[in-house]
Length: 104
Image (cartoon, rainbow, N blue to C red; front, side, top):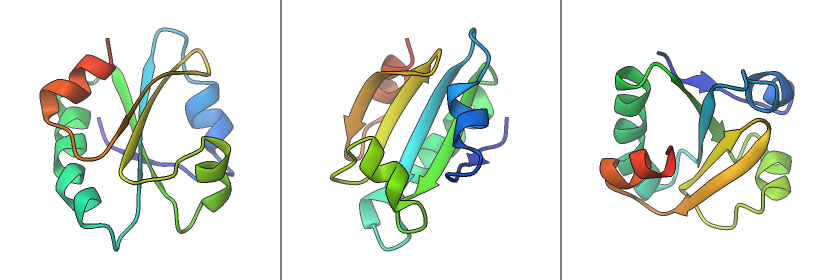
């Protein structure tokens, strides 16, 4: 499944109103962030390998209000949502196994 780019305009639809059976993984990132660039291929790989997971990316420079709303203080930050609620959070570059564990 492709990665969905999320903005303040489509956040409610893409994340909060996602199917009740679907877990959503959000990668908060920025283009200037080297750790974000290290994590991005792992997140993309999960999107391809886990079609039941909705994978989204939010550029904090373009969407600062979303980063502020979810108290993203450091990047990369990963949040998992289910039924419109945050389930788990991870900050920094994580191995694929750790990210998959966030989704359980």
